[in-house]
Length: 77
Image (cartoon, rainbow, N blue to C red; front, side, top):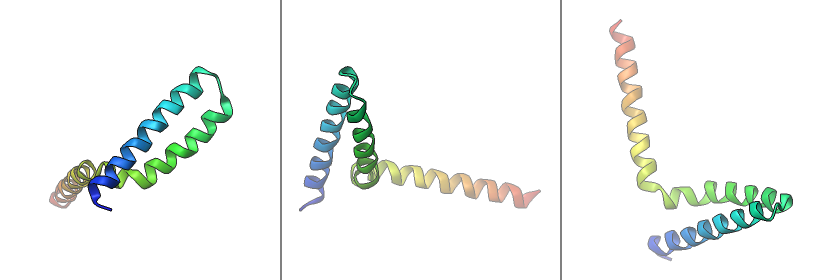
């Protein structure tokens, strides 16, 4: 499967998760909410690298830049 089709599948799974979460909250289904929390954590762990790869890369670069700045500032004291 191509990267684009993986991303499309994860976007559909995310949309389904959002809709099911709203339905569970509005119907006051506690068991459904707990199950969807577990489902959401799974989506976050498995789908995040695919869905948000560019965003995650930018954040990683920013963190490295801040770490480098702080190390340089610390060594200059």
